[in-house]
Length: 255
Image (cartoon, rainbow, N blue to C red):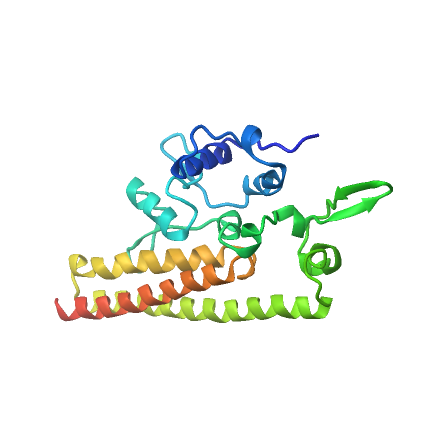
C-alpha cells in the first residue's frame, strides 16, 4: 500500500529535472521522501506535457526546469509547435494544466506542504489517521485543510484566498485584452500590406505573450498556488503583447 508513481512520462520528466539540478539517475520510487511522493502522485497528471516525435511519446518538458520560460526554451530548442493561429499565422504553444509546475514555485511547496495536505487532508477513522479520499478544494474543508497550519479564523482564511484569486483574475483579463489587441494589430498590419518577413517580430512576441497567458489560464488554482510567480508571468505576457502591438504597427509602415 506504499505510495508509488507509475506513469513513464513523469518518471522520465522528473529524472530529467533532477539531472538538470545535478542529481544523476533519479528514481522517485527509490529516492523520494514520503512527503514528496504525496505531491508526485498528483504530478503524474496535473502537469504540462506534449506528444513527442512520430510515436507521440508523452513527454514532460522539464529538462531545463519547471518555470514557464524554461519550458518555453525547451520547446523552442525542440522546434515544437502545438498549432498555427488561424488569424495571425503564429506558430503557437498550448499549455495543458501545469498545476505541479506552478505549485513548485509557491510558498506551500517551499514549506514542504504537499498536494494531499490541502486537497486530501488527514482525518481520523476510528483509531487510524488517514488521508481524506474526497479530493476537493481546500475552501470546502478549511478546518482540516488550512487550520492545522494557520491559526486563523475560517472566514479570514477564506477572504485571503478569494482576495488573491480576485486580483489574479483581474490581471488575467488585462493580459487577455493585451494579447487580443496584439492579434488585432497583426491582422490589421497584414491587411495594410505588411510582408510576412516584416511581421515575424510581432509573431514571435505573440507566441511568447499567449504562451504565458495560456500557461496561467490553464492552471487551475486561479493564482493561489503561486501568486507572485503567476503575477510575474502575467506581467511578462502583457509586456510582450504590447511590444508585439508596436512591432505590428512598425511592420505596416515598412511595407
